[in-house]
Length: 123
Image (cartoon, rainbow, N blue to C red; front, side, top):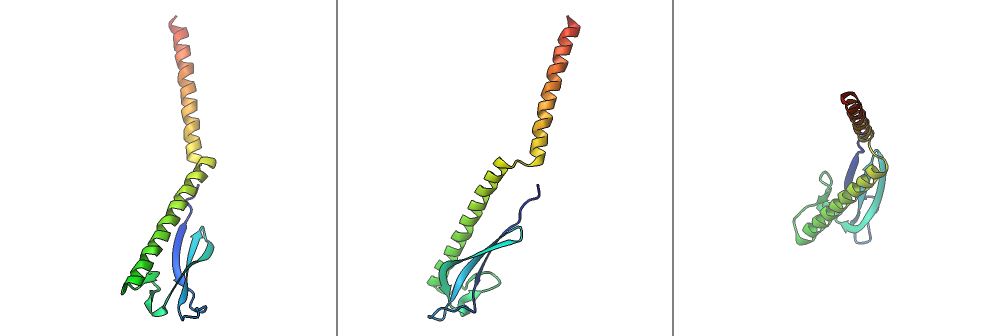
């Protein structure tokens, strides 16, 4: 099974400024080129946003708290992704895992047959 790609991006919507002049912050989650976007219910002044880093300039307490919140969201999303991957692996085991199980089972049966044959020959 091919490993799934997973990416998280924080960005501001520049064309939908709020009444206070700030831009709403969104998170985009991409899994295997399928995107999902949602608002994080926070906003920021465009002059305080670092687009390339996807975070606020840490020039004041409000921006540092916002960056902490963004990292918390990122951490929780990665935790959720890991849990979903574990569930997926439980219900849809990887092919090599199935092959490994099959190989072990065949090897045990083969040893059992050889052992039984060995006992018959030695008696």
